[in-house]
Image (cartoon, rainbow, N blue to C red):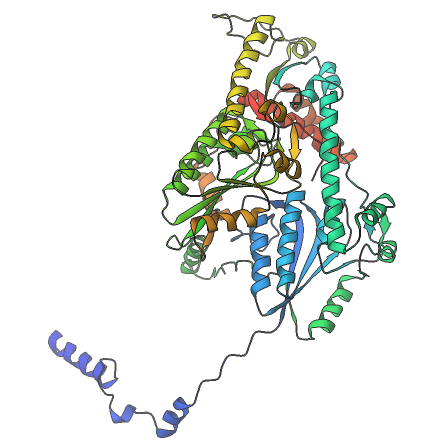
Length: 628
């Protein structure tokens, strides 16, 4: 038997003989001269990549808060705005990309998001590349504003172009509530704070009517100007297009509204003729490659899950601009109680943690607070504002306003170093509202009686049985006035001499577009998300940096794991909705089928009612009924 020592020497000798130990291999193993000569030949350079056309399909909702699109099994998912802009910018810089095609498939997209994408189009065009827009149908003026930023625009034959202007409806629920025995009782601070009018009135007040008109005038003028700039025509001609609409594809082409009428296969033929027969149409350009699953072995499955987790990791050594989102109605804590009415919530507990993490992370050199919110809880807004101050004490803090940043959405924004808004952003609405629904009459109709007991003069103020008593009303108004004073005080203390009018002439619930807000000193710069990030990086004196979402966007797999383990932010009891929302839920399928736009408006209105019931005093914008 060979000893261990002998075995070691034999193994060592074999390794040396094979050249693995750094020694010269035996002659028997040496390569012939022709092999050496072959090795000396220069290696062939890899062939350059084929020319590509980056294709972007826009469908569904264009979201604000990014999600990790790894592990979606190849399915279509909502597109985060920043991710879309990053992919467009990548295409602009990529020498292999010769053009960009944007195909609209009825996306839900707001006016400020349209502006952001059009700016990205301009960066593509500045790189010497065409942006080619195409659609089966153009369902709104907003969609056409986006397409008009393309270098070449086409639609399919017989397509409809509903570029007929801006239309919206604000619901008023007073009579519906009366029919079911519910009495609304709301108080406001400010004549223009009309968020509760949908419950208290059967139509707008003169102040709300005036405000709605100045907003529509500003938004319409902005949309007309953007179409005129994109199509290189006069605003007067654009207005003539709008007033003579809707248009068929053929009529629109004859008017100059678009450049071509063609099916997609004809568009593809045009692209190959223009850019070469070998051009590649890359329909997944810039998207993350999904991990591949090898289910033949358990190790393949473990590797797959490991790859999913690894794909979500970020480089924390590289300098970054951190982005924290305030996306949706502002609440103190997340709760599934709102899920029936809203697409999402901006919870102050989560946002405070994110801002504190950003403040304490040395690799984060500046922070952008991206706000797309109609407001919400006054308390939650104060918590977020306080957290922004801690960021600003350590590093540059910039706010980027999306489609809406009003009331509580403005509250959280006002302490930053600079506030960016798009011309079409809806903002302002400095004021507060609160109240309750008295549902005693509803229960009487149902044959249900309640006997109330109380200790303390104001113990039953928020009880839903009846309206406020005169004394309770005075107490509630005094309480709200104090919170309103704090809100105005923050704006005056922070914005200082930037305000162009006394605060009481700017506040009172008045809502403005970004174009109007900059003239009043409520915002600092007109610009988009991309502009705000660049400004923050410049303030932090960094040139090479990442843009990092805080908290990190989670993959679907991580969300599933967290939800199954209960380790997420949606803790606590689910609170029941008000009775009127239950009735709406019963009628929802019929209403949705008959009139989806109005059904959504009522759904949103009741969602805000639930927000007021849940959060108490709120800094919430009125429902303007403008849609997206």
